Length: 165
Image: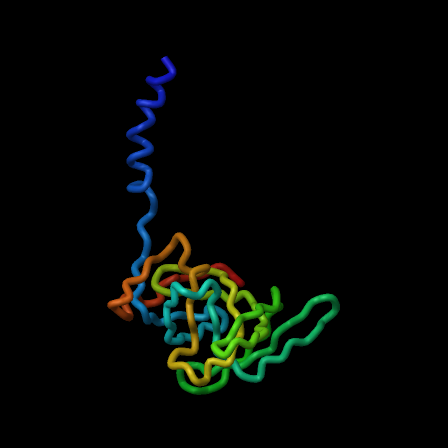
């Protein structure tokens, strides 16, 4: 008698993946919005990176009471500097190409790509020698998007009214 309920549940188990919400398809490059202050940047989608990364200059980590805050500047789409302050979640230690270790502050930023909005961890790095100021990692993509590396700019930011950061 116990086999009947299992057999009855089998169609539900087979159909469960089809019932999951469809994922947005991103190209290897997309336009992304840093929601506050509503700045659009070109972003490289990198499934090899766990954490997203924003190219900044003049990053300063300042202690305010028991917390650390990062003050940083990055170029907006028109080239004018955009300055933000965010609470530091942690300091990431990353190996560089020559075997050294870089320490980067990690902050939370609200980012919108296509119809996907996430308040996501972003490390602050010098990306001046790289082509794209924003790199989007797997933490942002997880469960919401897949990447077609042969295509680019498949979406337009359309998150509407995003939650407050």
